[in-house]
Length: 361
Image (cartoon, rainbow, N blue to C red):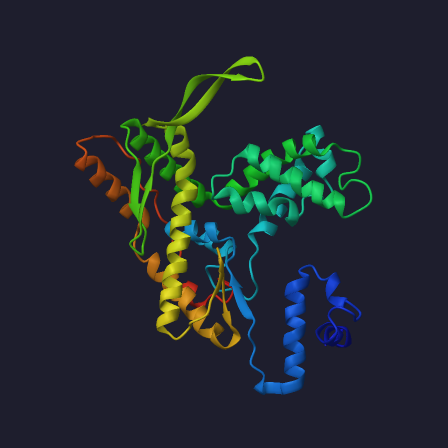
């Protein structure tokens, strides 16, 4: 084991030793691991580990959209199908964006040529695409990534180029690259947006039930401004107080439905996994969004529960179920409005998820 001497020193003398653990990216987690290793060295195989072992999803939002639409291409990019090595959609998007940059004659592309479009820059835009990130939002994310890269070296990552202008150009390229990589997810998001817009046109919220039975009602109301006269420090001021009105905000409904719907699905998967795990004897959990953890002795059970519940969740056509629910809601309110048709599905074999080593890893 590399650095075993330093690791054991960190465990035995964490405050007055060599402080090797201080240099770790996550020092407190690393120190906890040092204690575990020291315990194992003393007790051997009889040592009982208390650290959680986490299994992380591969861009979980896109995993859910790929399963919703049985998208074989997108599913392969986010490890829904077995492979000898893990797929990395962030690297795939970076390569596609770099190819577009390298073939561009736009003067703004010059600063990004020669391998400057890297995984770190496109990761957050790709991750948040299925949560309705806009091209403008991606520009901000790219600029933030550039700022972090600048902090880690002397000078600027892009040389003398101004990060704002560079991020404006690349946001368009990354937007195009993501949409070309996960075509089906975009169709699913557009369908949901169309449904929310149609419901807002007749002043109704968007209601649905998640796969575990949780009821969701999305209702963003238009903000109403009211003028209020106040006196402060001898001066008369007119302030506008914004409060929630009674009308449906159609723009907010359309913007919110894709992230809210997919969040309701990944939370349903989390709940189903924990309930299944509990029935299989797992009593202790470490969960952060799409990262599921338990003790090392139960990781095999966790992996089976993750895969089984995901396959079961999408063995039902959830988008058709969603649309049918809205049709019932319209009928109950005596409203008639045309909802978009459910996008067609692909050829993804959901059963393959059970055999995919890197689905959660």
